[in-house]
Length: 315
Figure 1: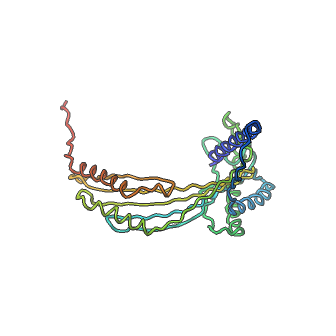
Figure 2 (figure 1 turned 30 degrees about the vertical axis):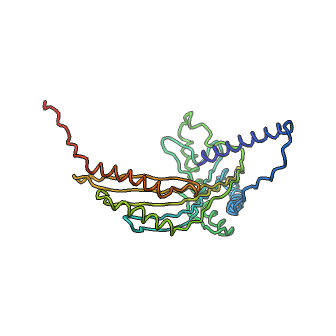
Figure 3 (figure 1 turned 45 degrees about the vertical axis):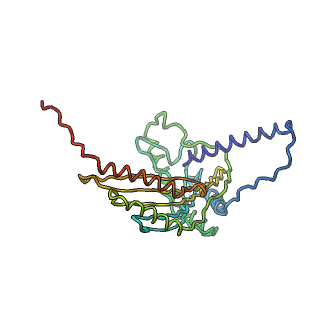
């Protein structure tokens, strides 16, 4: 996670440098007519709550023994809708939203911390994460973040104590003497958040219709069509000063059919459409064309003769 964040931060830094260079060249160019100012993305109150708890926790835990020298928070907000049909009937239709918090706490210092590897044993860092409320209630959010921070600090402190004890009696390799973490310049990138409003009823009818079309083929014994919409927003804040906020949205339509060969072997065909702009959703013509190809391929597989294994000459 840290590598991905730092790669994104590096990109932002390069972009900032390019923009700065463009600003120096601009006076020599012909004056352009006034342009409306860019509307900056709105900073989420969730990011503000994360930063508030980060400041408080880092001030407290950096004074402990062992001290926390780095804390990072990542919250992923996921909104998902899914509609699925089978053989002309609706299987399921649902929509949900959740938030997932991941906390990274490093104890010690950049040279030696709780992630240090001694021998063949790699210490643990962070955890699987924990759910947090989807309401932007600052007090409730900060309490949930604090609980996970405290948990991760205790684990990191315990590992660092073990590492220091083992390091004192084991020889360090060249690799083991390298710093455990690098200090990076903070970067701030506040991008727009993503969300969708979906009427599931039209898609419920579509998956019924799309799967019902497969019933015309005797080779198809089961068909499933699933439509899904996914919007994810990621928020990241670290004690080094980095703040990131960005969102993405994508849609998918999956077509799946099953059949059986004369010898009982399971056969299947799969196809999917992916898009990010609602206007780019496949129309019925494109879907039925894909279904016709899938059906033809499956019928060919079902009708194909059994390939008997060849027997080589006896020795």
